[in-house]
Amino acid sequence: MPGSKDPELMATEIAAVMSGLIRRVRAASPQGELTPTQRSVLHRVDAEGPVTIAALARAELVRPQSMRVTVGALEERGFLARAPHPTDGRQVVFALTDEGRTTLEAVRKAKRGWLADALTSRLDADERRTVDEAMGLLKRLADE
Image (cartoon, rainbow, N blue to C red):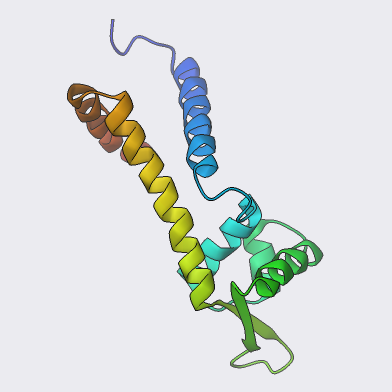
């Protein structure tokens, strides 16, 4: 009977399915292009604008030393550029470069493309409608 499954079991299954889907989508992005941490940093800088290493480290829950390594690799590849902090001359901020933006968009496009193809090739029209309806419920769960 629908709705009779134990909520704890449902929670476990949803978490496992979501994790698997996220892994598959991540795997669809250009191989070797970026580590998960590097992708996360680029997404954050893209969304928030220029940011210090300390702020990135806090947001990503890592030590500043670890974030320096990640940011250094992204800067070396031309994805991030440093600039003086606008109000504190002792600090620098890092911003996304045009090349970083292009790379980030390529990663996003590959992920969306894989998922769109999977929806089309693995699900029929009725199943896609069911997924679409479930999205509304998942959004409600995700809203705080």
